[in-house]
Image (tube, rainbow, N blue to C red; front, side, top):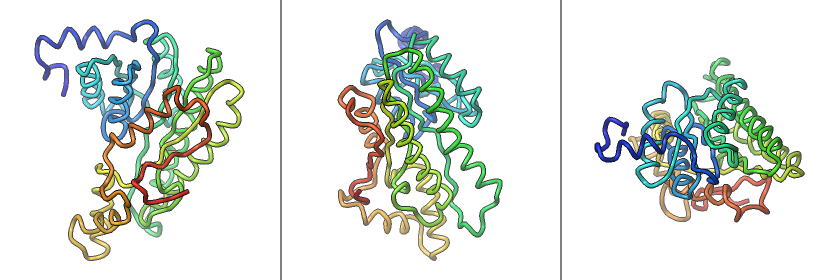
Length: 281
């Protein structure tokens, strides 16, 4: 949904709420927020009363606009921005723009990430490097730039990263993705140690099988490899979920809501699984 799609009487509400955060409202940046889990997180933080900076690649502008509109029409406030998390200067500019929009930075959700469903023997080195650039370097850039701002502000903050169930239990055909999420888990722990003295908590969330385009592709590739019909491979993996259903983005957003709130002030360095009981740790 874009601004041109909403009712005329709502347009003025959307435009005024895009202008910036109301005074006193906490400010959260969410990367990769144009769709999927990131969109769900952004919408939830908007309902929680934070001013949400909805950030994604320039090519995702329509999705950015739609997420912003959804937050505003639900009663929240939001600003759309573009970023390439693989470029440190781009993330630095995002943080500066967020502070300009809201006056400060309280929460940074490093959600942006990519996956490639491929057997390791068939992987191109360039594709492997791209996964590392987005999922590791991108999280490093996000964590570091957020922490610099929070240290300068002097009143702490919440940094939250996207890990995965594969940070504990790798999946076949997701070898490179699994490696990056193990690395996110380790980076999260190290950052939590270093920045605790500044009142900054650093945690990550680990989704399991989520009903998103990534898992549709995993199902397709596994089905082709194993001679199955579409949907069979996903159902086979989902059978290990003790709560009996595949996750939706809102399940993950609830965990991020907790990690972004004062309720989690005594939690740091953790990767919190949201997988319906597939993996225990």
